[in-house]
Amino acid sequence: MNKISHKLILGMLSLTAITIIILWLYQVVFLESHYLNIKTNDVKKEMTSLESLYEKGQLDDFQNQAENIAYAKNIGIELLDLNGSLLYSAGDSLLQGQGQGGLGRSNIRDTIIKNTLAETEYMGSMTHPRFNTEIIIYSKLVLSPDSSSQILLVSLPIENISETTAIIKQQIFYLIGILILISIIIGTFISKTLVKPILKLNESVQAMAAGDLHTRIESHSKDEIGRLTENFNIMADELTRIESLRKDLIANVSHELRTPLGLIRGYAEMVRDISSEEKRADHLNVIINESERLSVVVDDILDLSQLQSGYVTLRKETFDVTEIVSQTLQKYSLTGEKNNISFSFSSEDEKLLIHADISKIEQVLHNLIANALNHTPQKGTIRVSVRKIEGKVKVEIHDSGAGIPKEDIKHIWERYYKSTKARKNVIQGTGLGLAIVREILKSHDFRYGVISESGQGSIFYFEAEIV
Image 1 (tube, helix red, strand yellow):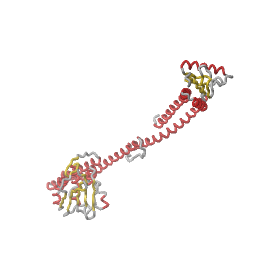
Image 2 (image 1 turned 180 degrees about the vertical axis):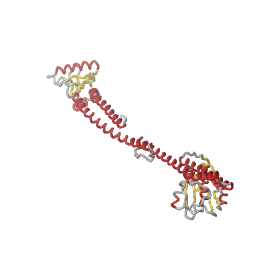
Image 3 (image 1 turned 180 degrees about the horizontal axis):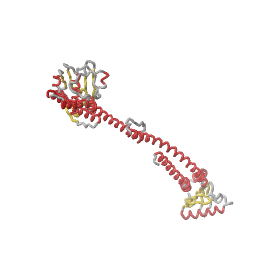
Image 4 (image 1 turned 60 degrees about the vertical axis):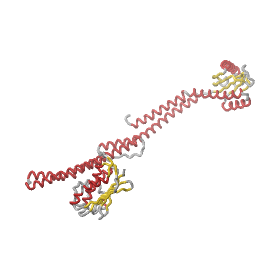
């Protein structure tokens, strides 16, 4: 009984058994008492309506209704005086036929009269003297139109239900077999419908535990199992993303750290083994520069990994983006002069306030300006603008380089991607700058992009809501 399918079928059979027991008790054990209760209530109901008509003196209506009731419901109706003489009857009267069985009927009449006079009404059952069938009798003292007391008697023969009970028992036995069969069929169907996705889920969990992170479950159900499979797929997507980040981190480390580490080791061995006094300073400078580059690479790798994993908490504040762009641009003025590249800056006169992580936005600006410097030739110009457009602020960095080929535009946000138009680095990069820009702007839900035409340079931009 460790399988859900077996438990479901057992549950259906248990429900069937309970249903059959209730049906048996109601249809067999309590059938007769229920039947008598219904007939008794029927007799009393008819007595009440006839009594009302008779006491009001509506004799024609009384007789018409009495005859209708007697005919429709096989009820005997009698009106007796206090001496037992029959004044009126409709249907099968107890006092009719004084020949055969007349004495028996007289004894019934005397018993009824005696009990009615003692209690003003009488309810009981007796055996019909002629047909030997049980009869429900209900009698009551009523007032005639002339205010004299009389007895209104209603009698109803009770059918023998023992044969009916036997038939019901036989039908219940047939019904038991049918219900058991239906329970097994329905239980099997439900178990397959319910257990099948669970089995798939179990297989997928085992596959994932074995290292297959691409396994997914197709489910169109909206019930609890459907939501469970949906959550499993979400979990699988998240694990796949984490695994991808892990592989990216390993790839980043192996790609970027191997070269500077090799140089550092090589020059360190050279300094140790063969460097002369005049060359030692140059070799040590290489080691220092490569170690600095290594530090930048590690920082960029960690920044990108944290951004992609979603573990970075943005410390948002409200600030003037125009001021931040201007301050960041000034930091590159000396680099521009050394490489014969000029900067121009244009902005709105008013303050343009946005709500963001100021350090992350500065990092975006640094990476975009550095990228522009690396793609702008000597005597070129980098134009930076901050504009207000329909409730948003738009920051643009426009270089005067050769532009980006159309086939390269969709790849420029990827790590380590370098356009074939890229010039020699003015600023040492790691190949992760634009990938970091993308992740920071995505985490802020800022719109970003690039516009580039051959020979016209490139415009990198991002937009933020003004607060």
